Length: 246
Image 1 (cartoon, rainbow, N blue to C red):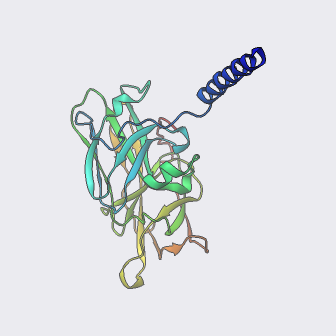
Image 2 (cartoon, one colour; image 1 turned 180 degrees about the vertical axis):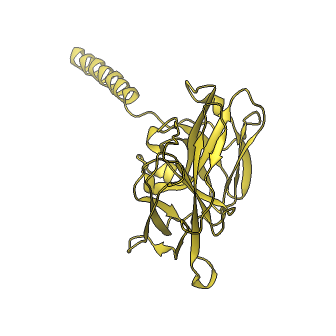
Image 3 (cartoon, rainbow, N blue to C red; image 1 turned 120 degrees about the vertical axis):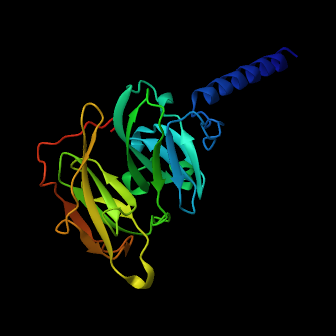
């Protein structure tokens, strides 16, 4: 009977150790609804695509999650919740599909479907509005690669100087994938690079669109030979921009 008692005690110790090991391992994801609207948020985003998207502040590798937005919907994001966020600043908001967010432990630049520039002042109650345009290929199948050879932000607008902002390139980024749906009947599309700098007092300065800078292309299938474009800001070589969360 003594030997049996010893076995019972040993089994209890092993069970406790197992529980301790389990608690020190990977923790489950938070159960908070990341798609819930934050009505007091100053960043408003409208998702015109047919897929749910999760937005990040800055580089997706840093995992600063703003929240999710459902397909064909709009919601507010409360950016003041970001830890140690300055009162004023500029950052790039980047979005990946909800499927990639939940299934991939490590997100990379090729997973980014949308990027946009956010210039904010937490004391300003006016909303900042961004649109995830329907022209984005939410499947990440068709696109181009682009490089920004300047010290400033390069915003890419589709088909016209005032067309939808399809992506934002950080300074000196190389071979960034931009996913764009092919146009009807296989016609070429156009990209118009708009270079943006932000002054210390939050004033946004944009370059003047030029026919010389625009690029014509046909979105090509991922895995094949995708077109590559480089853009230079010749108008203001001394302009700079300070980006958070990169």
